[in-house]
Length: 148
Image (tube, rainbow, N blue to C red; front, side, top):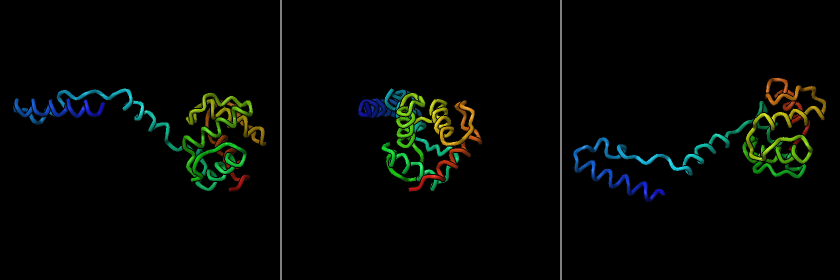
């Protein structure tokens, strides 16, 4: 597809130069983003880090804890990205906490599953799918109880 795009831009440029419109030659007939390019762009949002209030040390603790309980979070780097959240979603689903699709996206289902899990460990959270201050504080406390 890129070769086709380059060819179209090249032809458009040649036509534009011949017509005396060099300024618009490269963009006048630009090809819209392909479906694949739109997917890659959308995935960039998914790859964002969501530590839910954890600092790097506590996020590493959470990642180590996931790894040590049989759920591979990828690199232990203190950045809770897609792989860390996929591991958590798999764990939550296996425990019956219904995190939903294992996609690494920290949406309401993942937050509700995390809240259910934290409640099992002493928190008293509303299971509402909102990562508010109480959920972040409970997550902070839990991640402080596990060590890398």
